[in-house]
Image (tube, rainbow, N blue to C red):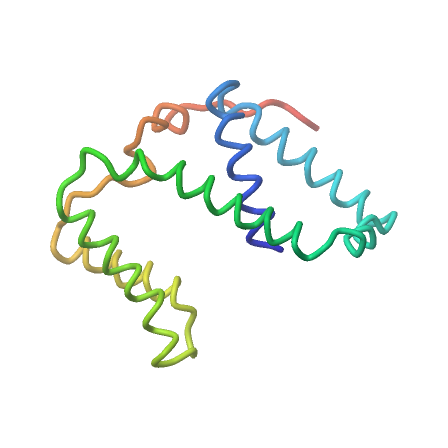
Length: 145
């Protein structure tokens, strides 16, 4: 459930940063960590045995659909290179495990596609170039200690 919990947090954090700026991200992350530590100390993880497998599967599938839909706007108004890189990335992710499992296929995909874009100088949008770039350029973090 590590990736599912991370995906759920990513969906919540995007709206937090969009609505309240990046300043709240650090405080929210620390608070979530403290809540998880307390939940672990009082053994709340044991309650997961009461949640059926079909509920967990439905949650993870709905999370995957929401993440996919959130990424669709990033695939519009881009050059054909982005579609070629996307298809290449999916091919590596799904075909590499049939050849070898020595390295995780997502890691290989990131390294290979980054090398290709750098080697050929392909102009693609990156994290710092999207509409949220202004949040990361000159942000101040709240004093939480």
